[in-house]
Amino acid sequence: AACQASTSDSEAHHGRVGGQAGVAPDPERVVNGWTLEFNLYCALKAFRAGAYEEFCAILNVITAVLSRPYVDTEEIGQKLLIIQFLSKFESDVMSLESVMAILDQMKAEFSLCEDIFQDVRETVVKQAVAESIKS
Image (cartoon, rainbow, N blue to C red; front, side, top):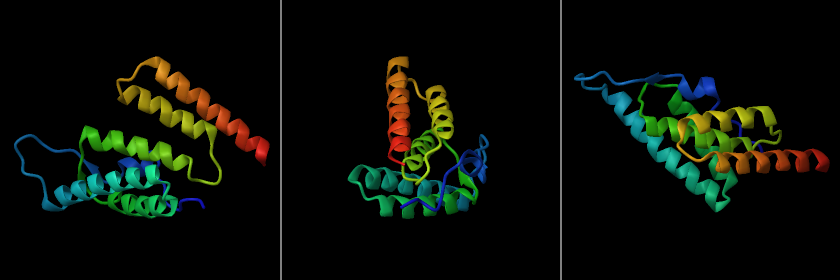
């Protein structure tokens, strides 16, 4: 089943509020940051366990929290990219272009070697071809 919620680029950054040096963050932003961290952890755990309905339900929570202000960190941004990438495989229609765009964004954010990204790219393309042959 396709996930109804999606952490697309515009959604992933809507409501994002960076911290200002020396200024105490608003409690709502702090709690929303914690909520995001917890739900990102839960989403990854559900995906690894193959609990796809649970993964999709958690994506709905993440999407809702992203519409509110939250304390942003580099780690949250990276985790959102990973969840966004994984959510593309949960949808009924996997757009190769959108997956590749997310992969390129991940390459820029993470310090992994080129070989790993080439392997992932090749695997994604192979999966897209296999899916198109099935249908």
